[in-house]
Image (cartoon, rainbow, N blue to C red; front, side):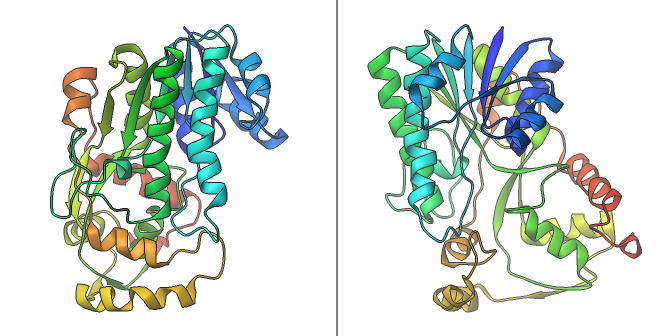
Length: 327
């Protein structure tokens, strides 16, 4: 199978390329810059120049492929302006499916997000969970609308579209997004945290899930990829066993965080700042996802959270991101 990958220079896209190459498949990957070309070539793909905004050129690059993995997207909870978020996650998804149809490619695997499920507070998110009808962040809304836009084009153009919805992806190489919380706690002797629920997916399991979705996924269906669900308190216990830190935690009352959420706008200075109202709303809501359908229908086997954390900590230490004294 010849595969075409968008977003191959990113954390998830690079892992998808490596998984495909590891199975002996030929991969071409879109590269918008010289740096992106170096990144995808390093993963084993053939770099092809292009831009998601140029549908005609994109279709020309896709021609001859049997499947397109549209992984490209923006994962920002605190953007200064939402325009680029929607242009990439919504318009870009529609353009990628149109380009695949123009190129004669019949199957597209769309990388969405578990956030697009929109499960109600306190419930377990599943592929068919009813949406709560509101959005916690602009990012969540953009991924939800991106799925809708891609599905509409696929129906119009006769494309087999399979959607994957990864939960919080962790693994060697990630230091942004939710990994910031992990790094903060692992570096701190005393950490200030509040309890919440979240779900975690190993980056390699995420990549394998994409490949399985291409091979076995049912067109028009979505597959949640999520290996472990836990609370912040249980995560701290696990982190202590692995790193020795944080030695002490100040548990901030949720009511205090909820009251302070509007004030987080004052700290919202740089693009993709670590704290903003959308981040706090998302954390206060919490997420528990059921990734069993991917195991049952696709054959995906999840590794343990302990194994993922050990790999991440080794990677952090090798790059001086964690103090050796924490061991």
